[in-house]
Picture 1 (cartoon, helix red, strand yellow):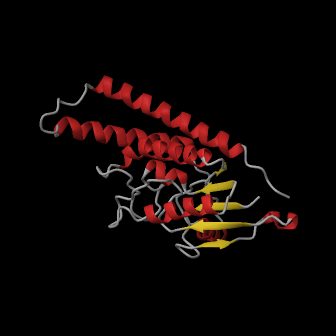
Picture 2: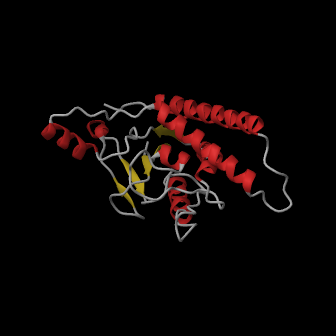
Length: 228
């Protein structure tokens, strides 16, 4: 069976589907790679942080058509899931946020990402495709080789491991800022923002939904079979 890896990458051709070599070469397996910078493999994704909101639509649609035309049965999806889901970059990483909604609020990415993620998988499965989710490389918020080199030269240990609490704190801060802004500037025709206790309860529900989504992605990732 043919396979295709669809990935958001900064390297390689931006809008072509090319043959790729993988660790399964010894088994004579073959496949393709579809990759475009700034575009996660999510059908219908819109990048409101880009001048061309529909930047990814033609490419992702063409890949879906390619999968159908070539009768591809195995699709591997890979991206910086955390960045698309949360919007903001981790720690001191440089770069603008990823914005998936017209309101351009990173905290709204969670729900939009969840919708796009499930819709993409459902569409592929509807076409009788086996979908494998490849988990992201852990976010550390710094250039690891440079930091390690400086640490070695200075003889000072450095902590690189990302902490789950960092993500929780980032989300809590975003929700607090959103609630504060809504209280000060309620939109015309809308009711005033909810009381702090009610707003916190809503934030807790959203956080629980995010955790469930994370677990769902992990379960799908665990199904990845390493070809030897």
